[in-house]
Image (cartoon, rainbow, N blue to C red; front, top):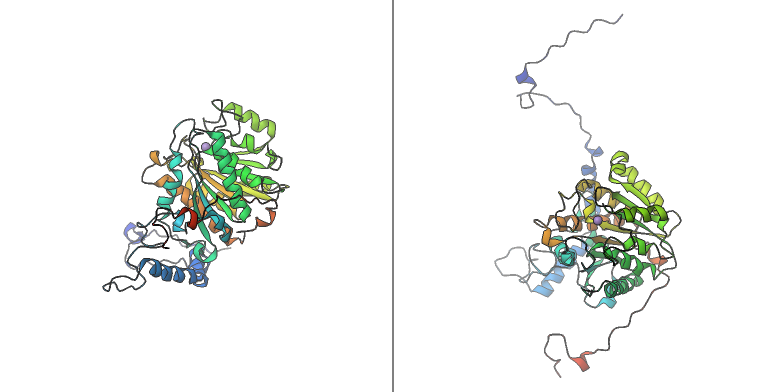
Length: 422
Ligand SMILES: [Mn+2]
């Protein structure tokens, strides 16, 4: 027989309070089990060479600083990352690749697609690329939790914007496909910042045109975007109808995550049913959790294809977090869910990505543009951490070579400059 336990005496409330003097906590923490502890140590193994080079470059470009400034790495003219509020903003203050024939020198290339001719409610996404670039200056290329420093572990450039034609969808699509084909042909990882979701079709086409291989798509959205036409045109509600008409973009490898609410047109549902695309609704995600949702999406998107493309519509996130968008819908992803899903999908490798539907005129304190920036940098960080950056290159087996115009300094002078000295 067990001895009767002493009845436990409750301590007076004052003694139990966490602030009670002399109270002993006994969690016996093993810090090495915390992700933050590991990340703190992992930082020591990330090189810092590229940062040192950038600081030296800034002094060369921006001249040495005033004598009173103690930190001798500070130039007179702001160049590169610092200060975050200053400078001419490219995405993440990456080098501006003004001569686009040089994009192949970089692991990844950002290209803005300032086009909102496909919007069916609020316009404004033509300002998306500039809005995202502006707030992206807030970030450093280092992520503590991932223990990744993009500047040290990959190369990135911003090739500026595609010249879209505001009143003409089809001409704009041609321009977009051509630009994406150019970047994809170079082997650089294309990152498209929209723009409304109509650009999904020409963006995927740009990659599909330069490969004989098959492409799957993971599409984060509240909307299915797969009807043939809307308001008599190929609007932002239609990209996947046209993308999955391409022979190397099978509809069975289109995975649409986060769909739901009161803005999914019945025409789109009919097409999704006929083509047997894969829809994982927001409620499905909530039931299965982020990890299983990502696993399932990857399984379906990668089934029998060589590459996967990511289309991230910012309106997949609950509209309370992303007011600056064209078709806001409550009940979407929480930011942490969206970021985790995007990272997990990116960790298997991607052949390109687009971020669409950021509309700065409706934004508040740049939060929607910031969320879009975060999706992109998390995808890049995840690809780098998984060693997948550049993995798609070997599948680009039909590269195009676009001619540039006939121009030379000798015959045409310079851009906005004095003529060359003779
Ligand atoms: Mn949408």
